[in-house]
Image (cartoon, rainbow, N blue to C red; front, side, top):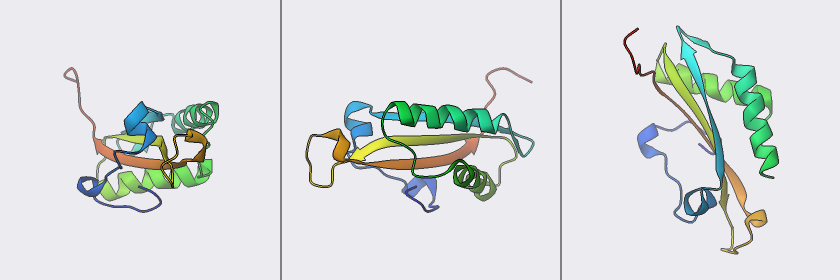
Length: 119
């Protein structure tokens, strides 16, 4: 979260974040199966397209984003996981209502893969 790895239980966003107040955010979820990402490049490309269309470009490069997501998986110790990346509009540094003055926030995490049906 915001450039560092922290325990999921400590991750927090402000109630003044546009992502919370106005659902002004985008996300994507990548699956990891047996320690390998499934179609990671396609998920990252879709994520970048979404951030650009919302006019809140991701501050990380595609390569940096891959390292961050791999870091989430590595720290989680999971072989099978959902890895979610989220970018919110952020909040205005001086509480203006103009969303263009906000600094986007990036969050990523890995959680255990959950089956809907039996394998």
